Picture 1 (cartoon, one colour):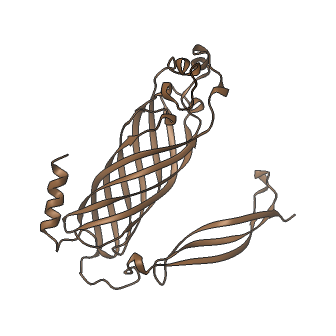
Picture 2 (spheres, rainbow, N blue to C red):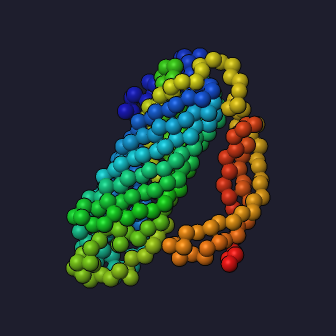
Picture 3 (cartoon, rainbow, N blue to C red):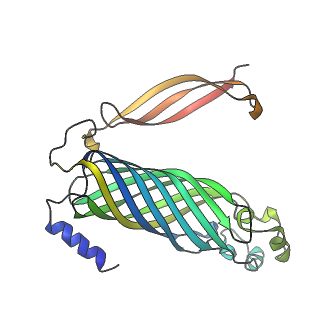
Length: 282
């Protein structure tokens, strides 16, 4: 791997006319491997996950993707952060379990430049599922991810990429990975564990294939604008949300706030809502 990536970079530099990116609307397929560098509060040992993305390319600069990664890790509860000198020896008595992780989500990639070497930024959100062995119940957490990387052209419509990302989620490692008898054996209580914020650094590399679209040097159309030409948008909104009575929520809620985002062209905006307060309407 250490020799292969530099050779691909050299190939990209020697073939400046080659572009993996395509204009117009295209489809992307990216198998990849990821190395996870877990922090102490994650309770897991560093290892690899495999998977990739499938998505939609909107011109040369924007890619929307569905992401899926599956990994197998061993627990490392003896090194949980925040443990005092009396708690640490008991944590080391906890059993080691194998945990299967499944990460599913939606990702946005913004390519900053066209050409044989493409720097990009990426962000994603979705569901992270932990499946410990010994028939323990699976647990789930919503995650946020952000990072960036470089994509190197191998041939027309083909590229390799390497990126670094930071993955953040909240969970309780004791509830996720331990049984009651595990706690009793180590003289621990559920109160010894709490909900924590975990932020892990990940490195991912793989290959990307573009299908459809156009390889023409000159791109025109709805998705041809460079990111420097995108403009911010702020849209106020007021609405009303009606709940099914089976949910045991107030049947009607009034909501208001703002949508904040970017206009990527004349027909496509990316937005997120903020400041949405709700009040009971009945």
